[in-house]
Image (cartoon, rainbow, N blue to C red; front, side, top):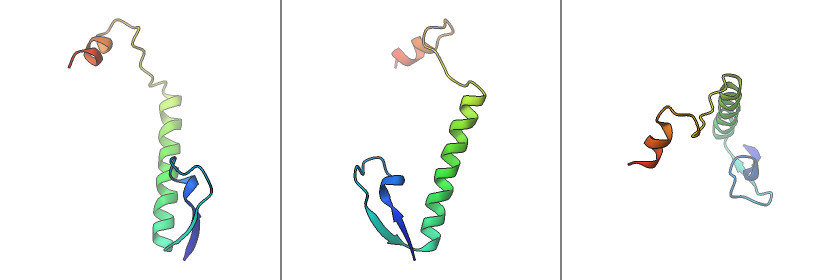
Length: 65
């Protein structure tokens, strides 16, 4: 059994909340956290940020259902 801090994995926890979980669950939570960090780095490196000010129809698509 591994003790994890739920505040590290869930944004709605505002205080430290420690709980024991199985080793498999703890590893999955850590793997997901690593995957999300890698995704954020990949988006930043590739500059995949969309501006609604450019005139390519993104703003229109976002405003019209």
